[in-house]
Each structure stands twice: as structure tokens, then as C-alpha cells.
Image (tube, rainbow, N blue to C red; front, side):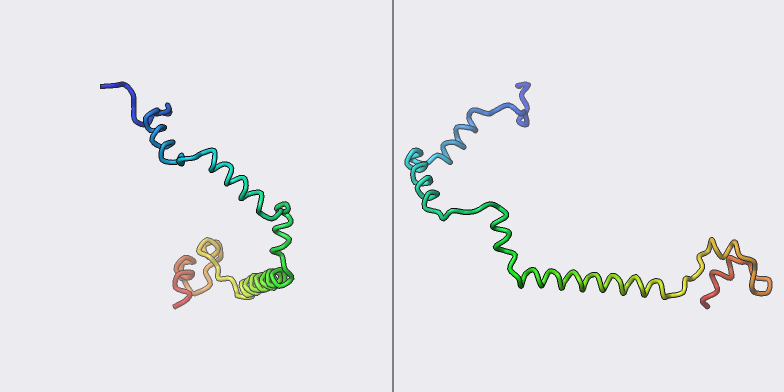
Length: 115
């Protein structure tokens, strides 16, 4: 048995040769020339900002602004509706309050209040 694990970080020369053989074409120098010629024929591209500016057409910007307003309005309505509903006292608050019904314990009053 060898001390080498199949998961070692060392390079495997046999596997490297197989991968290079599979990915190297019959004419590597010709491939580089063809690739360079293809890249030279491509139109000049600006920076990333130029590409993003081309995407930002007025319709897209208007749709994004409208979506932002709708989302903000929905969040505001939900927040306002939550504040408008009366708060039901929690069990901890009910335990601190004095008994309001004749003889019932505060915890029982809080639990049975909705019935």
C-alpha cells in the first residue's frame, strides 16, 4: 500500500496528460491565430459603464421607479394597518394587571378573554 491519498493536493502527471490531450487540438498555434483574428474583427466595446448605460433606457428606468413607488406604498400601507389595529395585551402584561373580572386570575382572564 502507498501512503498517498487520492485526495492529495499534489499534481497527478498521468491525469494532467490526459486532460491536456483532450483539450489540445491538432493545431494549437493555428487555433491561437484564428482566435486572435476573430477577436480583432469584433466591434470595439466600451467600458462596463457604457454597457450599463445602454441597458438603462428610459422605459426600463421608468418601470424601476414605478416598481419602487409601488413597493414603498405597499410597505407603508402594511405599516399603517398594523399600527391601526388595537394591540391585544400579552400574557406578561395581563399578569401584571389587577384582576378585572370577579375573582378570575389574571392569566385565566387573558386566556379566556377571546371566548
